[in-house]
Image (spheres, rainbow over the protein chains, first blue to last red):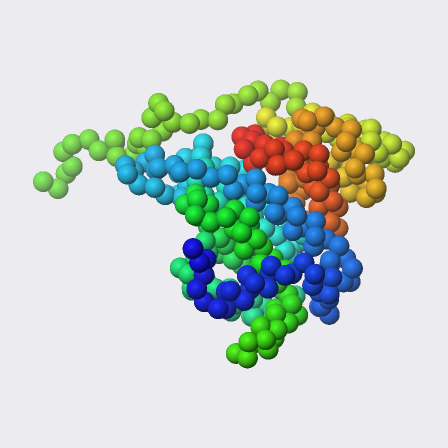
Length: 195
Length: 150
């Protein structure tokens, strides 16, 4: 099944699939020394990927409170025994990922690095754009969790219908958002397709 | 008819609290778990005995304690030890732990991620990588599902 219909989102997923080779060239004037940045990026992404893989063990679980209802327990948070420990993985004090799990759903919230005002505005607009089209994304949450920029809600129904490794990768596209890489991807896509 | 003729105190009751099937966490005694001894660990670090300091820091985890100060102290001690390791020493240190030790280390690592400061996250990420190589996904799952956190 198609994860997303708009070509905008296809751009980011497509680009992310080829990000491995470009990773080393991600230098940005706003950041700390490029070596340090890229040195922590790989372990950061690996740590998030591993934790996500561990947290994405979901099974169907009907609501214990209301008959014949099926709710994502991480959003309802009514029963303590169904919730996992929330876990944070941080790369520095600005970038972190919060993973809250439960028996049938996982909420992944990402705080993206915003080095200056223009990045803040751009990030905010980009995230709003995505979140307004959350229906096409299926796993995107319409509002980010407090303190983070974007949130995903993945339920057992999603894991049943989609590949787990693709789900993991798709949430990671937002993690390395910096102005340079964003503009370069935008330029590349627009250049290669003419519009 | 203005006065309420029937008792209405029952409306203040939360009926879910008295449900006998309700899940309550087991309350274990927090007796001797005071966390590792900070002074001892500091002395060992100064002397350069990293692995011993590491093992001592991972002893006596305040898992059952409800006092957040104890947990904070233990977390600070462990973080100090973890950040004073060189990158090349991390792997042998992790290999010297048993399965429970690796799980405990993972718990402390995730706890350390919650308050990033200076370079702590970079070191913690390296620790995470090595601990994951030894403990595998199981160690992460045990951190997520633990009812009592460190």
